[in-house]
Amino acid sequence: MGFEAAPNIALVKYWGMRDDRLVLPNNSSLSMTVSRLRTRTWVRFDPSLPADRFWLNDRPATAGPLQGAVDFLTVVREEADLSWFAEVRSRNNFPTASGLASSASGFAALAGAASIAAGLRLTPRELSRLARRGSGSASRSIFGGFVEWQAGHRTDGQDCYARPLFPPDHWPELRDVVVIIADAPEKHVRSSRAMQDTVRTSPAYAERIRTVPKRLAALRSALRTRAADRFLELVMEECDDFRRVCETTVPSLDYLTPASRGVLAAVLDLNRAAGHPIAGYTHDAGAHVHVFTFRPYVSKVRGRLRRIAGVADTRVLAPGPAARELRRRGG
Ligand code: PMV
Image (tube, rainbow, N blue to C red; front, side, top):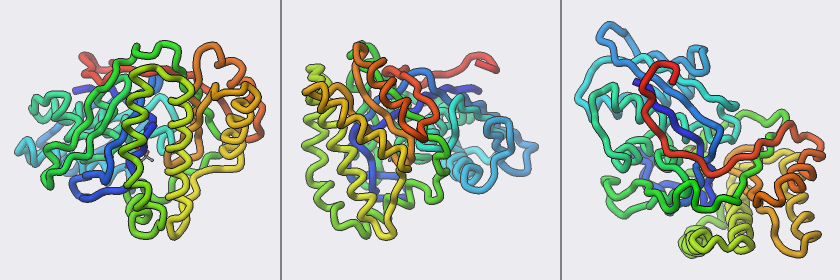
């Protein structure tokens, strides 16, 4: 069975868990699912397999990615009361483990494909809850457009799932210029581990948890009313806060390269020159930077960012679609 899902970029980040087995976050988060990028995954449970097999981008996966898939398939087997191992084939049309959120689209697509193959017929909400167990941000990639993942309160995680806020066509002018950084280092510490280091050691974390709900409400409202300046300011404020808790983690988490920092500085320059915000940066746990802007400014913003040394490429994305089942092999 095949399933396709797109990555999402967090506008309000998930960073820190109250339960790391069930992946229950400390705060609600908000994201935009993107267009053009996607993961396609096929799963087959087979009684003759001696172990789970996972082909990632046509190569056998090993170590972390393999273990992540096996752990997730174990959750699916428990839910479906199934004992067979599975063969998983998954392909990304963008670089894996580079900060382009392949874990979000990866586990969303795996949740869809594995649940169907295991005979579970899940609603999108149930699928979001299941995808969360693989990678928190994957709970949001089940839906298209603008998505909120509510942290919930229950200890069993039943009220912890994502829901769509606004559809992909809500703000037709909005664009996400993804700035791909050359030689972006592969992640050496998984996000789930890194964020727990932040919770334990960053002196700025408690303040972040106090202030994030207010920022999330403000962002939801800026989105609803399509308040461009406010939206861009809030996106950057949140990114700066996320970076602050990462940098004050012991040992310090620094995901950016000099080129990434050059992009952040160039965005501030562009806004200063324009006299109001025309672009807003954000990044996740990786070196690439997402620069939000609006259609009339895309060529100006892109032209400026492309000139920065160490920028390999830029891709212009828009709000993208919900995850979906693929009817035929090959999609
Ligand atoms: O879903 P994970 O475990 O890869 O963690 C995602 C963490 C961030 O991307 C930094 C923030 C987010 O909300 O997506």
